[in-house]
Length: 113
Image (cartoon, rainbow, N blue to C red):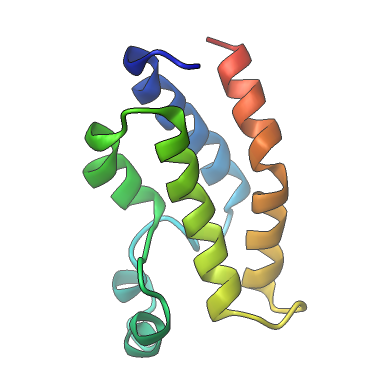
C-alpha cells in the first residue's frame, strides 16, 4: 500500500507519464472545453466524465488510497472507449493503449518512490 503522503507524488508522476503518451492532449481537459461540438452528446452518454486536469485540480485532495486514483484514470480511458466505440478510431486506439499500460505505469511510478 502507498502511504497517504505519497498519493500526491504518485498522482503527479502518473499524470506526467500519461501526458507524454497523450500527444494529442485528448485527455487533458474536460470534453466541453476541448470538444464543445460533441459535449452535449458526450454528457448524455457518459455518466461520470473524467480528465487529467480534473484529477489534478479537483480530485487529488480527496484520494485516500492509490486505488482512488486508479479508478479515476480507468474512468478517463473507459469513457473515451465508450464514446468512441469503433476499434479503428484514433481516440479509441489511444485510450486502449494507455489503459493497457496503466498497471505497468503504476508499478514503475510506485517503484520509484
